[in-house]
Image (cartoon, rainbow, N blue to C red; front, side):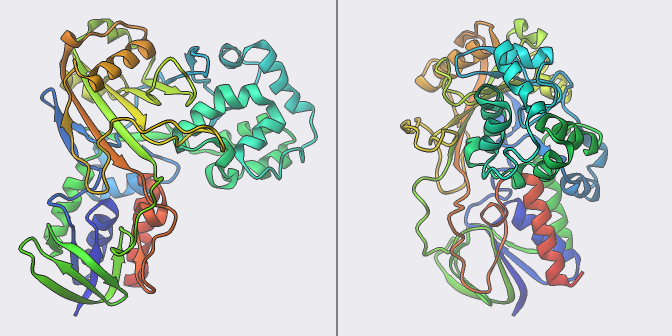
Length: 453
């Protein structure tokens, strides 16, 4: 009997297996595909090695940064370019994201960068927040209702929907303030206004940027985790599919079709029970990456990228990252070319409750490990991405300036229920939700509990 069997070779599985083995446990890790890292992988586009999905991590906690230091990557943790991102409102207006807000909630409603988005009337309505009694809206069940009652519909729709909704892929009317903005309710009651509450929370936040990256790509975390697992003796089995996951044993089928039962003191899984049917309405995401030779983009016309209101009719993309502006190290590698990453929702993930659903885009999302597929700039996907990038950046882009393009699609986690057997410990997105920082922190906590540290 081995000490621990870990099912799933995504980041959660790698972190847990590495920590357990480093602590002296005998660990077997099984992964149904032939690659490790889950969505934290690299792909080559236009001759550039790029992160296939996430290119940054939240710094609300030090979970990722601390792991990077342990893996020898501490000197390569970098902050994004300070120019910041822009947003597009429902009616297609574009403006820089106000500098001193929280999830789109302004700390100074009448500031010039806020008025540029919500207008004078919207700013005056938001300023009324300072005249309302502190308890107004403090018990609102959602972030959207809290903002609506304190600052009005314009601030909610023009700022909070594209920013908070873009960050969490969920309409603010479905976001719990206590989860996405811990301490906001208490600060509202203490400070007497939502704007002052935002100021107070920002003042308490650690210095630095809300996200960071790693020179060379987030994927370097996976490279070092895999190297450490080899050093500490983790038994990694690729092309090995779990067919039954129990508290003290995992049944698997290898690449050659051989069935094996792996008994263990503990079993951990980042995937739902194999016999369970996944929810049909999970979030679908498609990321289209364009590498373009377009000197007009050198001026960074929209900063590090744009968040888009989910109901904006001008484009179908929900966000654009100008990666070679966001990450100076990538600009050096790209040699004058520009890397643009456009994300698309393949299900209506940010729409208000009850809103009409849009049909799925022609994506590549699957239940398995996502694959990077080349894109022809002249086909439907390429032309859609070029049109959206042109609209969002305000610079005409054409297919003949594209030197590389690729698309990746995947489903978000099935959060309806993990469906794991009693005694099986859930790890990864299914257990911890989205976000690299939360996934890593939860995985390390699980390993620590098993090791008794």
